[in-house]
Length: 420
Image (cartoon, rainbow, N blue to C red):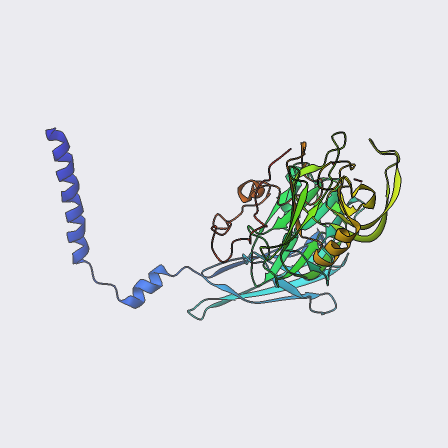
């Protein structure tokens, strides 16, 4: 072991020598130390100067070292200023509306540092002519000037679906802002037909949510473009949740964690079972018509009152006076939750689009995408569907904390086991 001791002694000697030599050098003043540590101010702006055929979805990219952005000005070829706002990470300024085709724009960016140094860079670029590529149809399921329930996900649907290698660029053009702040994440269905945005916990009542789906002119894949630029701002209302248990054939209605009422139900009979899972009210109709001609297990036409949809497959809560004798004891529906006429009318006054519905104990599980299914998985599984990194510190509130969901509204995967 003698050789090991020698190595350690040599290392100590070398370190001591280095310290001794360091003591012989002139001591740096604080000003000199600060100058040595200062990163030179460096600013880069994109698109590169004189770039042509730029998509109308263009952003002004900004990379700055040793300082921060002080001012950004974007003008068109008539001198009109283009409104824009920065991304949260500061990597770009996004015009508030799509740029015009075949127009020239100039962006001037100024950055500075604490030492008083400034740098200004400008770039002039020209947008492309209108593309002949086919547009992907997008649908934003989040309207403006509405009041939604606390489980309302922001949903964007695509036809045809978005391929995997294009989802990151599409996701970067989907913006959500909340007031007060309650950050969330996007998650794609496996087939790319829908993408959902939600926070780790349900929205807090009173939250304002502003959404922009800025896809117009965005190149998507090899031969597609985005179709439109859409915006909407709405509010979150009271917390309401419905829990339906097939074992008891009862619906429990909660508001702010307090049980308001239990309502007998009749769910889907064995040949047309209801889905088990966590769903969200998608539509409300005082009166509508179910027409299932041409559908499997269908073939009927019936008018129904007080109908609330919660799956694309046609599952509703609705008034069913014809089955009131079965409600609470026998499943006789085509997959819907049948309730009495009086109960259905009462529910219409309590619920909001975006309220959570949990169904448990039926024969079949809810399929991803059969409705707005963002809450049918836990947070860790949900964020796996994001095409971009999700901050690791974005997590659900601990159980029992003030930010945790109210009773009767617990997020996470439901127990497993589709209208009329």
